[in-house]
Image (cartoon, rainbow, N blue to C red; front, side):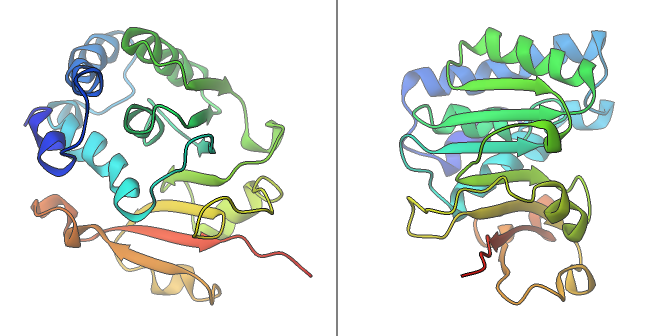
Length: 211
C-alpha cells in the first residue's frame, strides 16, 4: 500500500507534496534498518498505519497558515512529519525523550527538504513557548498527557475551533475521558474506508482557562 493511499483522500496536493509523501517509504525503510523506530510489521504498511493515520487529524482540523503545532512523543515523526508535508506554511515542533528517535526525525526531515519542522530530544515539560494545537499518537492516558502539556497551549485562538489537544487514540475511551465534559471524539472510519480505522479516533480536548 503506497503513497497513492494518501492521494486518494487528499486530492489537492501539489507535485512537491506528492513527491515528499512518496519519498517517505524509502527514507523510513533505510533508517529503520539502522535504528529501529517502527516495528517490522508496521514498516510494511507505513502509509496505512502511520502516514494516513497521522493525517487523519487534518480531516478534523485544518491548520491556518502561520499556526504553530507541537507534536509530543513523536517517535519516528508521527503525526508531525506527515502533517508538516500537508501544511507547509505551518510550523511544527516535534519532541521525544528518546534521542535515537529524534535522530531519525531529523534525517527524514532533511531527506524531504522540509523547512517547517524542528525536532528536540527533550521532555515536553522542558520545551519553552506556547502552541495553537498539541498533537500526539496515544503516548499516555489523557489525564497524564494533559498534565505533561499544561501551560503549553496559547490562550488566544486563531482558528474557529478553540486551541487544544488533538489526540489519535483507539478503542473504548469512555473511562479515560469521563472527566472531560468538553471533549469531542471523531471516528476516523467516517473519513477512511480501510478496516484499520474501524476503532481509530481523533480526540479533541479544548484548552480550558480560568476567567
